[in-house]
Image 1 (spheres, rainbow, N blue to C red):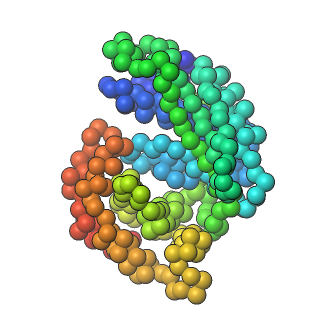
Image 2 (image 1 turned 90 degrees about the vertical axis):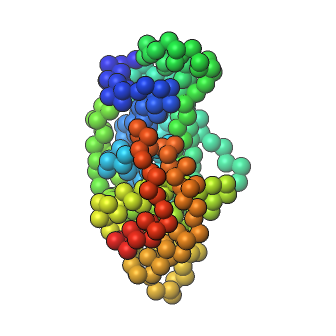
Image 3 (image 1 turned 45 degrees about the vertical axis):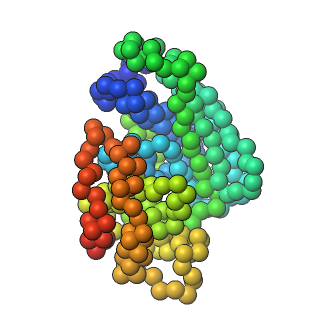
Length: 285
């Protein structure tokens, strides 16, 4: 295990297995980004989603997956030609990442892959607490999924950000207004099969607290793509607020708190979450 990664884990000061796994997951995420940067992936694509917000704009919660959007539609794009470089970067830091490209069972514009790391072996190499190591299954893995949208909605803006762990690398990332639009689209259009994604509402407050204004042309394009609005519909900030309030009225905020708590740091207090809070905060957009 390299000194850079060891120091990164220690910065988290993990006291539990779950906290250590979260730190390791972020290490994998960073290695994937460095590998993609080295492979010149960002000539074609940009990084977005919760992990982008976490790594580059200060979101204070864990995030699991990596999401990318091509800069223009390319039905022939394949992610597997970039995965060898990710594995090469990981090996240079003493991590044996397994790279798996997902085989599509149905036709989809999304290209998916996974980076997997043996949890037990990594705990051994980190020389972590024996009690932690002792309750891990030897075949347990930490898995990070990354996806590329090959038929993206357009209208987003992006900028270059530099990652610094485990090394410096330039990453093309959607700017905050465009990221906010992506989150608003998710809130308005995501279907909740089992439970609401409380992370969406945690992130919503993050954007509002920073007084970020959404990229409205990009949001309109995304809503058109998913059929939430039609091409001749009027769409502006007051209409957006009405749509969000209608959605919030249907949400169980006990479920929001329960889901979001799984991803926040240091048992952050979310007990104040309520329908009334979010209805009032939407007026600040």
